[in-house]
Image (cartoon, rainbow, N blue to C red):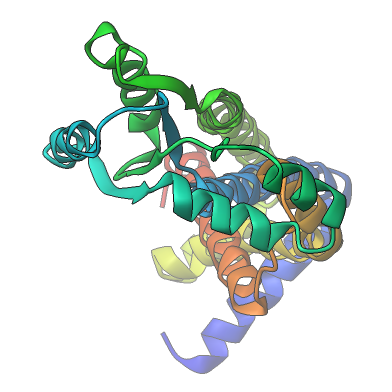
Length: 304
């Protein structure tokens, strides 16, 4: 195929697109909706995963020991926990160290420091700060610390607030994945069906032209090419529209969602490279759906 034939194919594809403008618009709209759903769910998955990672860096379990517990018992419990494959780090904070940290954090509250100083003994217990290797392991570790095995040594385990947050993020991730698969599958099928019908109608409208091209010896791909170009145009326009609609969400709304998910000052500040990568993925998905649709239509209705 020479360059002249190639540009003729493109020109005929553009002509087909203009001739069926309403159907082309419907095909582009369905493709755009499919890409928007994919993009939004993908971005939500990215920021939720990012939030989970951020929380994993910060989350730990604090186990507060009972007053008067011997140092040897504390070190024994620490050693047992360090042998657990689920636990990444166990840090021991003595009562004296906890009190010093408390005073450091409340230097601007002299009345509180004076009240603590008037006490005959240190009111703060010794603690273990425990970090898990995986976020999903925290609930099981917390349950272990609350079990009868450590009930005579540990007064309190501080984890319930983190448990709620971890459960919320894990449930959100599962929902995004499940909803994404269902919605993208449904709208991809609709997009394929609509483009299939549009290409089929174009084939019928150009039936006489196709017969003439066959008669003068046009190659199969010269005949099929304009229909493929038409389908690709749906992909290009749908990707452009989707990108224009998603960009304000990416730059404005996602950082706020990320801030809510992490319940902290951290926000998701995605780079332009991530957005460009998303556009490329959108275009690839749109190309695949469009080409599959056009090939199915040509295979069924265009005998060359």
